[in-house]
Length: 455
Image (cartoon, rainbow, N blue to C red; front, top):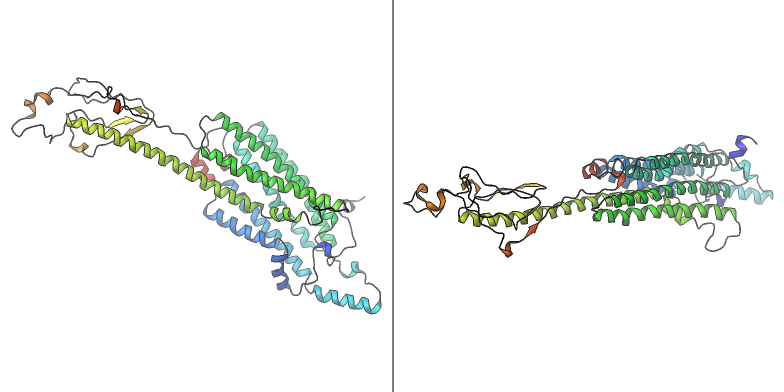
């Protein structure tokens, strides 16, 4: 057995045989054939997929994940264009040719040799295969990008090389499909469909491996992080669903392609066309992943915006509450404390204290994030907290003659006032982003800026 016999299985079918799905006999001119390809094949899905992925990549995407999506969509468009333009070319005038052959057969009573009339090698079918390999095996590579960003340990390296190794038999099978199409001059027969089933099975195996370890690494990361957020829930509800759906479709497509072409006793619902719905979904895998990535990106933006808005609202409440206390302090000549820190308890501001009038008094408050609050009238307050235009001074009384305000600073004690016991606490939790957004070390905090730069 030579190499050709190993990869090529000759048949008596031709491009006009209905089961090959090549020329239906209704084709006419070249342009009309191209137009019909949008309806009769998956050509339209690859065109729409490219346009939408390109728009999302241009206006919303960046980073390795989006670049891979864009490259794969271009490859899918090239592969579909080469294949369908080739079909339109070799099937031009098919209707007239078939009618002429049938007429000659009816007159002579001798059936023409279809192998000599219809068959011919079509090199373009083989040239389209590298693009099919890129666009189809990009799905496991995209999942690998997700997984590699979550963990870069020994296990992640083993999985990475496993995915690369699985790409070798996948490529060999795809080139075998292209070689048979090239030699026979048509798209499909039972042998080619079975080869498709094995190719889809390898792709499904690679997808499932990545999905299992993505879920494992994300759950392991979440257990190490004490403070979760709703973004993690979104990852689990959305991205997990998409990952599992893609795996499910690839696996069932592989099983059905092999089963319905190996066993001739077709039973409902496993008819010869039962794999078609799954094949339709597979043709837009990249578009599904792009939409999910876009929703995830804006979901992350909204989550971060809501978190920042909540923190700003908390700071504003602290500012208003603390500012009102300082206004009351001004009415009795207390020092105005303009600096405090983010994590505090306003129930223990201080106790009555006599301080050096030459030294500004600032209360010590527990700190985590420094915040500066300024009174609207801070420019009218002296270093000691006095108001230069304070109404307590009579027109005829100088400040040096004022007993109440010249020698000491009075700090009101709020400790014993129950209605003022309000505790405010600010906690800044770093937003957690999904791993495929950027590269990072094992289980390190997921930084939002890196996410935006790379995704």
